[in-house]
Image (cartoon, rainbow, N blue to C red):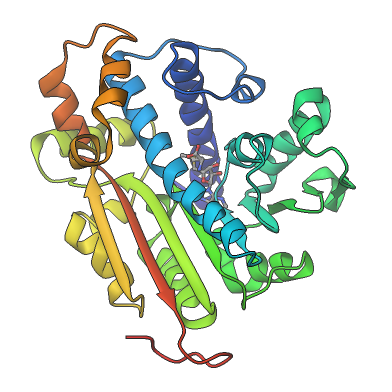
Length: 320
Ligand code: SAM
């Protein structure tokens, strides 16, 4: 498959995630009044997919919320950079609850950001969140800039050439504590491209947190089936071979100068990080009989996070 055709397939993966999110919202797993604006044709997903969508969103939301809370507690300026944001509604969800950082940047291909910018402009409840801010479209409608929110069109494979200049033009500051978010994104890149991003951040940012969610374990029967099913839809996930395990997910950060890294699969996430009350609530939402299938699916998705703070200011010194 040639490059541009492959890119088109990858751009389409966001629709899938968004339809699943709306399914989880409609059944009461998640509270997100905005996701409906990004879905053309809603469809109800099976219980294991709804549970997966809930856990993934809940885990990343918790990490993002902690980061935002800390910034308001110590009155420090902070930034969030969402890589391959697609139709992610987090900025709007959090801002609505009064949770905001100084700059929230979202990056995706121009097709995706154009659609998102148009959707934001079209819906009053999304524009209401940006109330009081000056909202401008730019770059032929492919980008949108508000005071604390920027939607930028760039190719992540050209991080230093395309992404960074765009970020910097909108006030991105390498000296501010910054959360980088990749929800099902780095896995679509060739490892040399995702590694370049992870390494640039650790070399350059004064203080950074990376939060990632993606598939692992391609080699057992379930994993092989997962990869085959994607391939049948022409979707390639080269990252899964470079980072196939929890340990290699941690190493992708630790070997590139990050101070600490932790990766957990969705099974441990459910047992260790979800309260009994939350589990009880989930069990009331819909009948959930596919326990074995769920455990298998959950073993093939991980959340990883890593952080790094440079000890001396200004220079790229190793903090280890
Ligand atoms: N993060 C969103 C979520 O979890 O709902 C979207 C995930 S979707 C599976 C993957 C996203 O990454 C798509 O929106 C796609 O366009 C974007 N993406 C993949 N490769 C990219 C690249 N090289 N440059 C910019 N965006 C990219």
